[in-house]
Amino acid sequence: MNIREKKISIIGAVRSGIGAAKLAKKLGAVPFVSDSGSKEKLQHSISVLNSEGIAFECGAHSEKVFDCDLMITSPGVPTDSPVLSKARVKGIKIISEIEFASWFCKGIIISITGTNGKTTTTALMSHTLNECGLKCYAAGNIGKAFSEIALEVKENEFVALETSSFQLDFTDKFKPRFSMILNITPDHLDRYNNNFDEYIASKIKITANQDESDFFIYNLDDLNIEANLKNMKVQKLPFSLKREAPSGAFYKKGKLFFLRLNKVDEICTASVLFIKGEHNIANALAVLAVAKLLDLPNEKIKNAFSSFKGVEHRIEFVRTLDGVEYYNDSKATNVDSVWYALKSFDKPLYLILGGKDKGNNYDQIRELVMKNVKKIYAIGSSAKKIYDYFHAIVPTEIKDSLEASVVTARKEAECSAVVLLSPACASFDMFDNYEHRGEVFKETVNKLV
Image 1 (cartoon, rainbow, N blue to C red):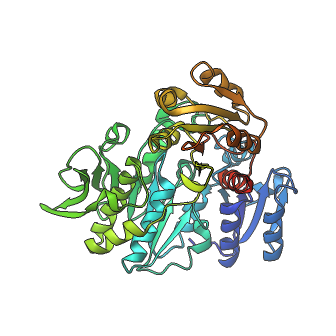
Image 2: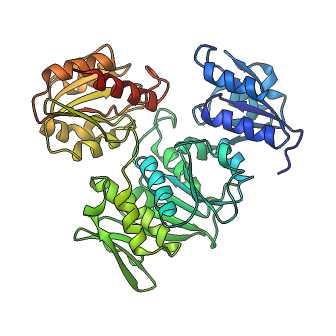
């Protein structure tokens, strides 16, 4: 699409919005950025926009945003927000930042979605392809916005793109060569009117424009995905922890395999993975499927898997102090993520939960909490809900801040225990994002004496 001299309104002035604005300007369009946040909260973004000479407004969305040929929305903007609703009434085309960036990216897109595991899998995908001699960028919700790197990517290079349901909601022609759904469990139900089917449909949309020349990598063990495989034109390739698939990647007797065209490749043992936990074996299988479709050598894949050290804020080891280990799992913004985190430890746990609730149901982790958790520290706007659910099961205390939780856990955790931040909630009630929350946790832990 030729956007030269087109007026483009961009809703949201954080990472993806700034990236879209900069890309639009490079391509000769006239971007205008609008964010309802305050000047104080958007200081960094305002500095960037000023340096780029890009017009903007903050504090509210004025009528000026509707004077445009195209509107790009950031993933943090609710689909039913007044500004987007009014734009729809006016007949303005609305797209997501990844849709916009994909129009101008010449490289091969590997789009990765799922309720959990997106960040780790995206990072592992990029790491594996680069270690095997290909050029791959990691973008989307990890690293830079897609728009920031779209023009850098050459035809035979790759983009491992972490893709959320919010970004998929406003896609139109988005067509990755490889799409991937890791899993689908209830999340963001506050955004989808408590309708799980709507959330599933949003995830499945990743395949909407794919055809026989493309590939869809999916979790064979996830019934929510399996129920939506019909009528897909794309080539489908599964991965599984539980069974040997007729083709695809699978896990059996402690080893990772790939099967296609009646040829079975034994890649490595799960023990070579630096990142631990059954969920990370599944993530590695998903990456393996793409790597073998690209005919990458088994030994190089194995070496890449063993040299990958994980991602920041996802079951990230911080330090050991007086025999107590501290782990930052700030990326765990839903209950399912916390389930995986709890399964990863066989030591007594002091768990920090809470933040902005997204319609959480804690039944899924009830048994694991009863079995492994010694105490819960509840924080944020969901603290009362967490206390009401857990206090009869395990000692639970409402704390005013994340820092206060860490300080109290330092006093109460016995030797050989683990203090784990795994909030099960969004961060926006107390922090800028989950990264900010994780950084505060790590800074507080590292100041302990």
